[in-house]
Length: 77
Image 1 (cartoon, rainbow, N blue to C red):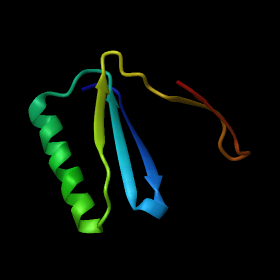
Image 2 (cartoon, rainbow, N blue to C red):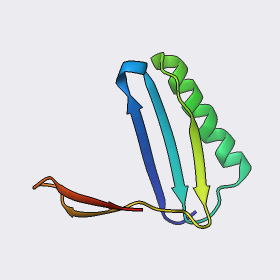
Image 3 (cartoon, one colour):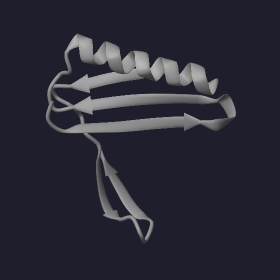
Image 4 (cartoon, one colour):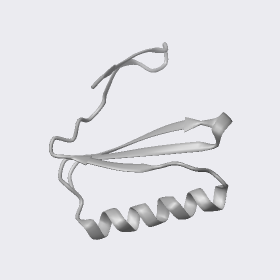
């Protein structure tokens, strides 16, 4: 599977959680469906809504640079 990056977007006021899973190689349909089922079960258990997307080849990784401790962080898409 290679490199994997998980990006989540949370909207607390709407109780919404969206997840993007980026990978260096495309995950096969069985793996994607298993992850999707786990995600949907978690949404149901927590009372949230949301969606999940898979990205690969090219994976469009988000690079984080800078100093996390100082709060000076840069995202490179």
